[in-house]
Image 1: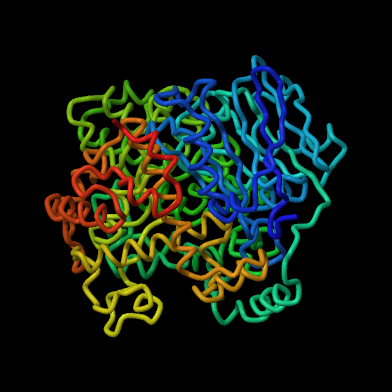
Image 2: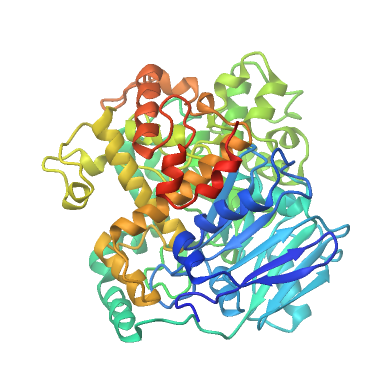
Length: 624
């Protein structure tokens, strides 16, 4: 028995129907831990170089971590992975809800899906067993109808389901994998990977419990967060992720009209506070979490509708289809969110593709003939909602936008690339890096393309004195948010490695565990006599393997850059905004490489670093 884990990894080959179970060693679990670590390991081991992301040689990975499925706040998260059809490199997305925990209860720490089924299928995993079932009758169904059909067919209303909607079936590159209908493994286009395998869904149900090394110590930690979360995280429950919109507006960091500006004149109409006071009907939670930060809304209007079964929009959605499209109507935003969940679309990428189209339209690169008569001026809420639907259906202009920013901009041409705000093909999330230059570095070097969940918040070192946890990482000097130098790089590297650890453990980033508490949590679950040093190495191991994968697939230092817009000022100006100088960024990208033990010129991880991290086997995957 390996405490904290089921001890088994399930492999399913959809091409020939083979099923096998891997039982890794205890050292494997301690070395790679789970989540991101499993994703990076299996991508390198199982996907041949230059494989087509939408071909049978790619794999689709569902991976829990140390805290996935243990009854504690934050233990409902897991990771998904595959070669990304958006970036051509490392694809990974994290997701909450209940499916990840249920996969653990069904007996498996991870599921690796190989090959490509000749016909639509779904997987039924229960009590340590798996069945490949036909899914032709499910193909074309939206998320809720698909989930309920599967539960009814199995006679198991408690089964938890991860699935794709029609967007994934149609291999829309900005599609995602929905867990429990309202939680999305949103980024890097993994819904298209699942659709390419003709895999409609994975249903799981189990009764096993995750073994805990120190039950009494674990219970004490669980009860502590249950009893104290209000003092640490009340805002997340009360107003959710969108509760920070007024602060972003004041800071000048609220993405507006395709990142042309950092302030939105109608910000108060779309804030978490306004949602709470108008359309919010409930707050949803993930497995074993008391904080309940998820929004549940109801809109029953003439033009726009949204139903409680599809949850409600979080900040990223509100920013992407709201302020960044110039839309200030919460009802329209909620309907777009529901359409994304029903079709299986990443709300961030869908919203960014719509704002891209709107700016192209306003600059004459798209005409009414191109849009099918849709007036795509910023602020047109009805057009925004209709384009969401079209992307999900691969219909009209939506068929082009669903290809993602690189392909869409290249096909439009005539300078459209300037309006495509992305890194490595992944659209920006809703965080303005001209205000936070450490975050700018994070967008540039992220292995998944622009990503905020393994990134740095510069506010952590803007005050003097710097906070104790940053000092414990060796960062002692404060500096403004909109500056970038070696001190900021050191802070970024250490803080971001720790956020990468969350994605290995399956721990939610919104749970306010301290560094010491996180270390102790891993100890009481696993029995390992671990410390922060070892867990930092775990995170470095994962991100370095992701780097090796990207370099093997042809990504280079030239891909670790920001779009040109980040080097231009806001249209309206901002007291905090400062364009990101490409030369300063490039210099500090090299500094980051050096600090990580990668070649400062190329970013290729050195043999010595691979040996330090005990992953020297990865050297065979480095470019020659």
